[in-house]
Length: 111
Length: 115
Picture 1 (tube, rainbow over the protein chains, first blue to last red):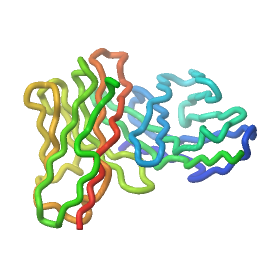
Picture 2 (cartoon, rainbow over the protein chains, first blue to last red):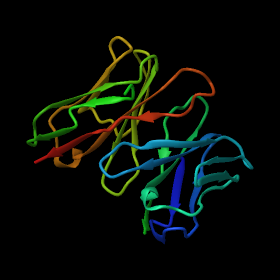
Picture 3 (cartoon, rainbow over the protein chains, first blue to last red):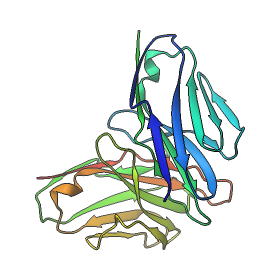
Picture 4 (cartoon, each protein chain N blue to C red):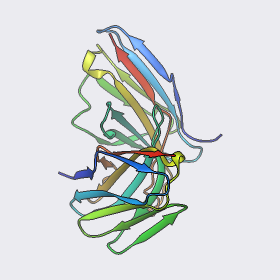
């Protein structure tokens, strides 16, 4: 059974204070690892897909990296508008389309 | 805006009643997914359609839950004899066909409250 564990559960940063969010996973045959952002009361917003160890992707202040056991979401010089819950999900198993999500990291960036 | 749309956005019902939710995917996306999310948790997969065929179902999808996608476009999720434990956000997502298109794009969700 696929499993995703995210840490920390919550993170409070000052504006400009860089940090990283962790996503540890176990999956049979990784077909993709996904990062989403979710604002309160809204659906998840797609950020990145990573397919193989060593892959990196960047978008504005966010950078996602992938190893064989975990993924990191690095946030450089965050702004208050980056405050949200960040969700990690994996897709595994031949032919399966279901995503298995972690519980997320609630990020608060204070001005 | 041509994103995934869901209706209604909020639904309050009494225990034992039936409810139905609708999802309209992004135009030309032939894959459609339903998830359920409770407070403080990530979304949990319920079911997946490719066109009108229901190809994947979770064990979470009890016999009180039924989903359809009759013409391969919009989808409905029905919950019969609702229970308080059914209270959650029900999310719909869609993705285009193609081996490289694994990304799923989510709608705003329908929040269900069972009294």
